[in-house]
Image (cartoon, rainbow, N blue to C red):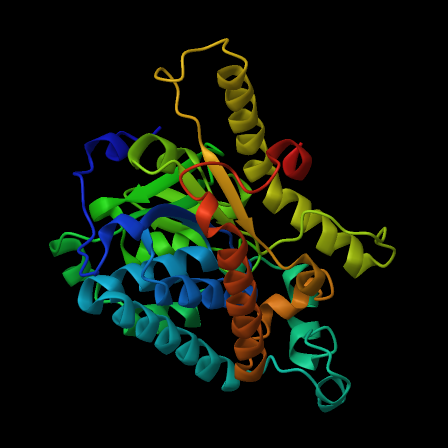
Length: 358
């Protein structure tokens, strides 16, 4: 575990609610998934709307790291309303940048409701080139348009100077060691966020303090242990982007690659969930003292019925209409989850960990 995790000072959210006894504190675990991160935006928007929910900490990766950072900055500046406004502003900037890029769905895809970019001439060219050349050759200046959207949405200097109302942990993968790196506290910079979402076939590894990093999804999508070790709340709500299960066996080259990516990006989370399930069973069976280990309460919001219909290339589609549609799905799923599970927070897990992850 990174030493910075232990050194980070305690930070308490500011509240102004009528009945503090009704407020339940939770932690969030946000997966990455490119444009599909707009689903998590919708989930976050709905949670921020509910004053019965207080977010203590967020562990996040890739698009989840961008959502988490923008939310935390907005919350520090303007509370719940500020966080919601900041998130919408960020995703609108992403859509504006995408509208100016050559990577667009064809008119036929739009007509047929296909959200993928698999027929985009510009993307087909890029896909072919990335099989023959690295980003160090194709993108020597290492231009990433998402950095512009991020830096317009977050003042990192202010964010590092001021105490944050939410604990923030961002995962990246150390290229040389293959280990997960957790950025937190003053280590949360624009470079750290970009490292968390650095796709190695498109962008050069992000260098921070002499080390190089790729997307955190390879080793922590997202990492749960920072929330266990550093946050008081036992409740962790995982917002899934990548489907865990698919009914159909992939047959085409694109479907196979898509499923490989999903399995790879879910593997680290599944490993941690296995460990949590093991410790929970030991506590429940009385084999270890509960005061010696923390019994975590795990919750999940996902939309596999939606995400499983979307191909991997739709993760690169940042058309505003598509992002808004995903946001609406996220809000609807979060709303349904709150109605079903709010009373269980602080008392019990609302998913069967063994059934879901083992």
